[in-house]
Image (cartoon, rainbow, N blue to C red):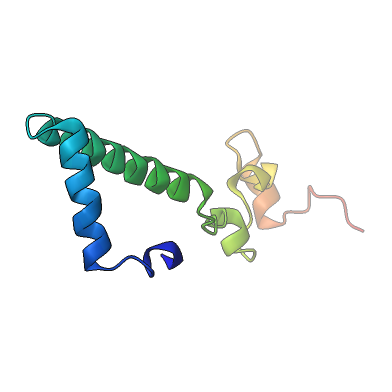
Length: 97
């Protein structure tokens, strides 16, 4: 933190003495708890924002991963049970081209 670079140990002691005189020794633990809770909430909120804004690559759909394999919906209708058995063997009942 660049603004804390100019504060030395003497200034910190002076600041703590002033805070002690203003608030008294009974209020210091409560002030410390409030500051600690505020810092924890700030860290939690900043980590939540960091997780929400993180860009992760989305996995490719399975059909795009293997283009050589046709989808199950595009199977030819000749393999269904309603098709005659001689069609699949190439009998003479099929029209010739």
